[in-house]
Length: 107
Image (cartoon, rainbow, N blue to C red):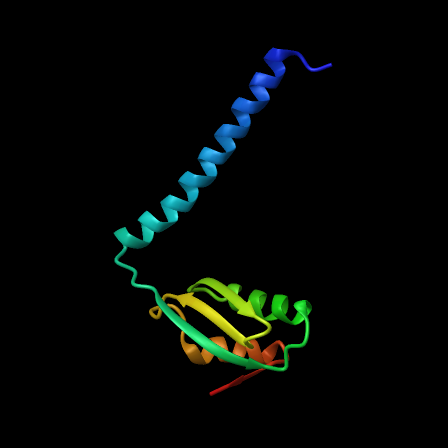
């Protein structure tokens, strides 16, 4: 049986974890603002994806690139939506990472 004091401590720690997570997310946003980083958004058309494994492969390839802030891939629409820092990464490098994973970026 868990004592009320132990349960209260567990709940208190859970709240701290949520608070710390929120602070880390906000810290990243604040850091980008303070550095004057202007993120750009791009949608790439990706051919050759057939399943969720393909989605994961393209997503991971993009997220591994320095300068890519976020990437989401839509299997049905055959697109990859990317938010990135153009000072750190080029569209050509993103295209190469996708193609290096076995998929084709088309116009």
